[in-house]
Image 1 (cartoon, helix red, strand yellow):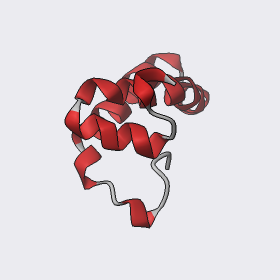
Image 2 (cartoon, one colour; image 1 turned 30 degrees about the vertical axis):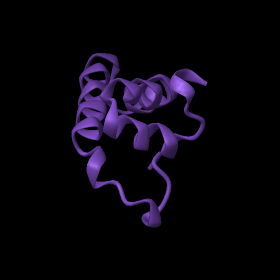
Image 3 (tube, helix red, strand yellow; image 1 turned 180 degrees about the vertical axis):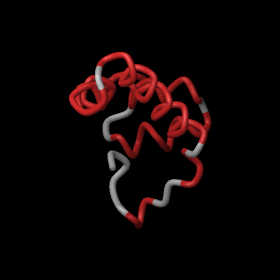
Image 4 (spheres, one colour; image 1 turned 90 degrees about the horizontal axis):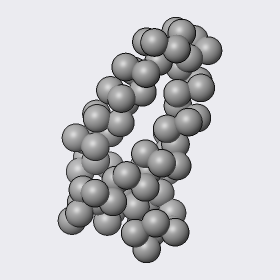
Length: 73
């Protein structure tokens, strides 16, 4: 487990103190998100949208509310 975090929720919580830990979530989910987007909008646009997805997730990570569900969605 990278950076000593197990679940996505643990990684997100740890990233609040150390934003570098957010890379764990990127590494776990980037391929899935890219594949999903590339099938729908093409490879070039999928790269931009994947980057934007993670940039927005990083910027908004403090708004996550554990009682509303898992991090992944």
